[in-house]
Structure formats: structure tokens, C-alpha cells
Image 1 (cartoon, rainbow, N blue to C red):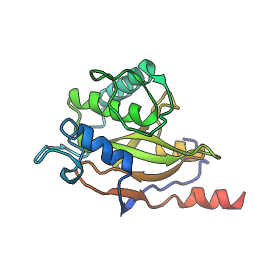
Image 2 (image 1 turned 135 degrees about the vertical axis):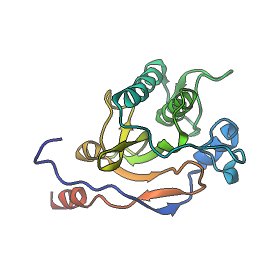
Image 3 (image 1 turned 180 degrees about the horizontal axis):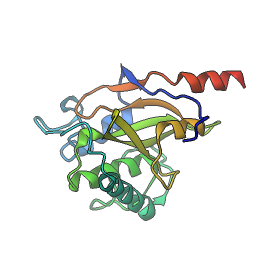
Length: 198
């Protein structure tokens, strides 16, 4: 991030009903994904772990590697009916789109010991008329507290929220593993002011 980049604040606040696609995902995979709340199809008493991983490079590096493997294995196809799936399971191929990348990455990171509470599906609006898109937040400990690093199939490298905002991404909502409701993105004031003044 450059010294003259606009200030950017991202906070999650205010409940939102989960999308129908997420509810269907939890009904299908709730026995495998501890992030699915019981009311959505999750298992009772499934631990979701700590809400952050340590700040070490190896931890983030593994998450990036797994994400890139999923993206590399994927044959991209847009769903006729938007279904969120874990790819590579019996009877399911490796064709899908952004939401399948996110949920498959979460599944593979769980098998490597990542806590589910630190991995959060995040809805963004793409620049221009790009529509909505799903990316993955990896929450990790930093000297300043918890920071979010985003893995996005449109970027080869992990991205910070201010980097995505500078490209015109608008954060919309994020899951809270183990809870029924998602949280809305609350504030992106500097970016919004800059957009209005153009």
C-alpha cells in the first residue's frame, strides 16, 4: 500500500439473513462444515475453533497455496442454478465458479487444521457492472489486532481490504461461522467519498 492511498475502514456490523445458496449449501454439507449453524443444517456441538490464525507467514502461505491449487484445478463454469459446492467430492467434478472455489478452499484448509472461525466467506460487489462475487477472508493475528487477508480467484496473491477497495470492490456481507446470520459491511467511508466526488 502506498503512502498516498486513501484511508480505508472495514467493519462488520448488523445482521443479514444468509443467502438461499448458503442455506442450501449447509443443508448439503452441514455434517462436514462446522461453520454451518445448527438452524441451517449444521451438527450440534461442532467446534469452530479460534477466530484467527497466527500471523506467521507459513500459515498464510499454506492458505494461499491451497487456494491456488483449487483455482488451478477448476474448470470454470457459471452455474445455471447458483449452487455452492465442495468440489472434488465423489460424483462431483472440479467444474464450478467463485463460490465453489471458496467453499472447497475452506474444506481443504479444515483438513489441514485451520480453525473454521478464522475462515469466512465474504460477498463483494465487483467494479462497474461486474455483479456480486464470493471471496475468502482469512483472519489472522497482527500487532494491531485481527486483520483480514482475502483470497480471490481473480487475484494470484492475497489481498488486503484496502487493495481490493482501491480496485473498486465494495464489501457487502460476511458469514460468521457457527451463527445463523451473516454480518453486513458497515463502513468504507474514504472510498465512498472518493467515488462520489468523481
